[in-house]
Image (cartoon, rainbow, N blue to C red; front, side, top):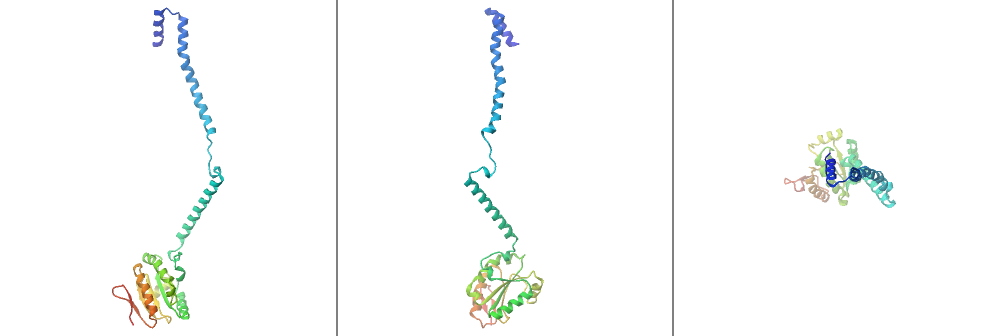
Length: 238
């Protein structure tokens, strides 16, 4: 309404005829009408054409051949590593591939323990046995150091090394009868089956035990060895 009144006032003052007013009104109204109609069509056309102008490629098949091969190899390596980690998690810690572990023969019951004594007597070697339990954190911590002792080639000339899991009931009662009250515990027997050393075998004790093994090796006629009161050295008792 305001626009019509303004046009009427302008016509009366200038003497413009009514048809000329209609022509002027049409010139004012037509351009906005065209813009309103055509602009949504342009936007719609852009939206329809966009997917065709920028196609999306999914998956490695759309990559160049060398890049696709590298990606597939990387995925295979990752899957292999995950499989190895899963298998490693299932292996008990005392059976994992630690350096020197191959020189520690496993004893799972009293019969195998007796076989170890018989074998060492036949070899003319002493028997060195680490008694442990799978649920013992101290045993697990000391295990790599124990393997490093068994790995020593000079000590292997004198000793046969074993690891015995006391979670077997027969081995548990065997060590109880031999006055073993704590684990890990390290026992050494002469080739004739006489006990020459018995000591706890924690991680901190392993360097002392290794030196003690050399002391036993250097004194084959000695019958007994023990840890000194300061827990710093294994000495010959008799």
